[in-house]
Image 1 (spheres, rainbow, N blue to C red):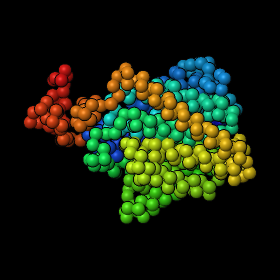
Image 2 (cartoon, rainbow, N blue to C red; image 1 turned 90 degrees about the horizontal axis):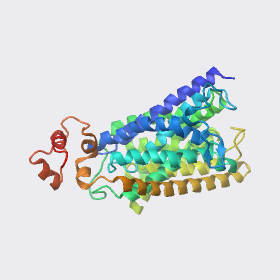
Image 3 (tube, rainbow, N blue to C red; image 1 turned 90 degrees about the vertical axis):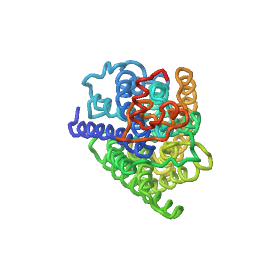
Image 4 (cartoon, rainbow, N blue to C red; image 1 turned 30 degrees about the vertical axis):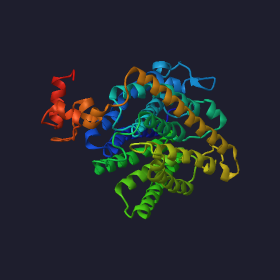
Length: 437
């Protein structure tokens, strides 16, 4: 039977998770240079629309249709056929409420990737890559873990998306940023966040929406939702503290950007474990998650030399990796009888399942993203050229600029094209009048 309280909570949670993707646009948008703020926000905003359509037509059935060989869902629910007003199997909510909730997960996952290649991908290539990524990488992985696929049969646990969302998006982002190459001037020119208040606003919206993300995954207004809520808050707070403390010791100043990044790192780390671990282990998971992600952003990226623009891999890839492994350590059936006991509660099987599933997620993200990059790049160039990147993708791709009266530093090629004027408005006008150039 349908429980109205459970239904209300899941629908509210779906709305909270929806808010996270525009919030992510602000979070990422504040960290890029002003000439790329609109295209960065547009990527998240457009994904909300495009992937929602894909999910309702194809994604839901690929993920939650009847299992086919442990690898994919059948097409029995194509276009939401056979869904109707049915009650979710073994649940207390309408299946349509579950469709809506999972739709928001499918939306935010590819949006996370955009932080890795910010400021250098053409919008046409972006839309094609993201659509194909959702169909051929996200949907199968979600089925393997949540839809009864082979990783679920192995015993892997992922309460709200450490494997399916954060590892998959973070590692795919790393793969893409390496294939695309570094931003021009990276390592030689300062590429500082242009609007930190916008980034903090985005982080606050993400933190707020994450309660729907994690607590909503209980699929009911119950004790498990309350546990996931508290675990999420404790982990986010602990990670914020650990990140800020580490950078304070290392650089001498506690930064606002560090605090915003730390809270996201903690939320990422607790996501797979929120419904399986008690509050005190959740605080530990968050504290370690903040330290791990800070190390990836402040040390690993510099030593390895890759240009993960907004640290999608450092926060989501490695934060999700730690969270998935930590689930295998701290999970207990005293919190969730439908889960399993982890290593610290006397059973090593879950830890092995988490490790294997993490390796599978890395492999799918790397191989799948590499192949899709090659396919899309053969159809349409993915990387903006030097003139476009110098001008900024806002004006080149969208014919707009984020701030009135904004100017930019033009390359010699653009200067000869524009003549004496190098402001964004005149560049837009010139481009419209001379599209062939």
